[in-house]
Amino acid sequence: MKNKFTNYATLGLAGVLLPCLLYFLPRYFPRDAWTYAGIALMVPGFLLLAAARVQLGASFTVAARTHKLVTTGLYSRLRHPIYFFGQFIVIGLVLCLHTPWLLAVWALTVIVQLLRIRKEERVLQEKFGEEYRAYRARTWF
Image 1 (tube, rainbow, N blue to C red):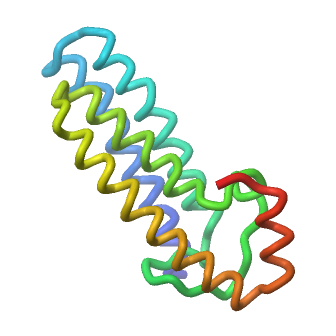
Image 2: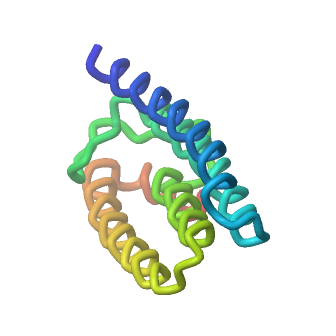
């Protein structure tokens, strides 16, 4: 039951944030190619991140632990779609804000995510062994 709630909460959050993003960004930020490029990255980023979160289902945890290897949906092509599409949102926001120093913040988020990925992959390797190695061989990132 808790997992269904968090899935619906994720979809609800995306359903609220995405319209707000589309409403406020063009109104309060310059209407130029940078803003529209940022929006073009954030919209699919939000939608795909929400889809990946729902597909992960009960396997979603904040800490690096696991009880099921998810290999369907977006996870059939990408090992870490939540991190991957989350970066679309961050870089899109940097473009919309027209603040070059935020690229340093973006770079920091990339480093933090890569460290988390390494930790998660160790946990998955220990738990699923050969099954995870085969999954890793047929997927990207």
